[in-house]
Image (cartoon, rainbow, N blue to C red; front, side, top):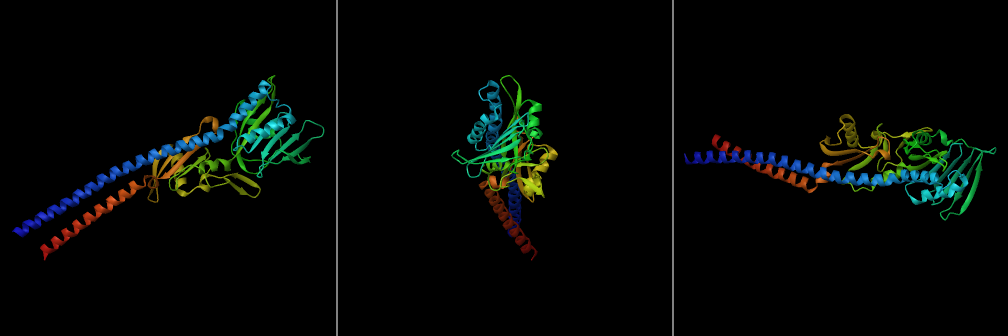
Length: 357
């Protein structure tokens, strides 16, 4: 009888241990998961805000300088109507801001002035004269010290600024206009242009000034953000085109002589594409989702209206990469609990087997 009582007590105790530990596992998992998501949420908030600030600071100078140039022309401080006198000003603009690849000034009479940075630190300017009997284009190359190293003349003047989206958009809206993604005519690289209409002191329309930013430069800004593990921040537009994506320079696809902006699924990992598809489908700006049994947190927000056309900044990070030690503790607790339950179950089996024998 004493042995039977001890056995019954042992069985009851071990069963209680199994149930208790099992319940503790469920409660602990729930709290740890909740804590992990909160930690990841806070990290995502901080990172997303940092990347957004970096992106705004990178893009704003283009629109601000375009607006400032138009204001200087209106006040008569800078005579942008004089194409030759304007050349030094256009060179200075791209020298002040490293993110500006080119400055363009298109005139209503078809004339055109462009200043472009060169890889060796120099500057090239292109001037198209259409309002003379001797229509031609002139290239002037300068070294990093500003000394002229070469001057070229061409009778080829196929480029007409009045046909470009940035010119037409700024002229028709009468205010700052951001172009869609396109391939720059001269460098054949993808980029965007911030443009603003230009008038003289007499309020006569002169043309449009446009400042170019190469997409590869925006991508490098995104690369500089401190992501945990394999997290990523990127910019996409309403057509799911990748405006900027880290480590993808340039963000274009070519077919023969034709080039186009790459879609997000053509440059991103599958888990990133899954997050973008969920955002497009459900419209949520912050959510957690699973891909191949891995949890990810995604954050989407629109860039300020003045910095693009329906552009969205996205940040996606693996939850495990953020929670770090919390995840290790979580796994350790589960392993220890399972071990306790395993020992208890083995003891129960042993007791039952002993009684059976």
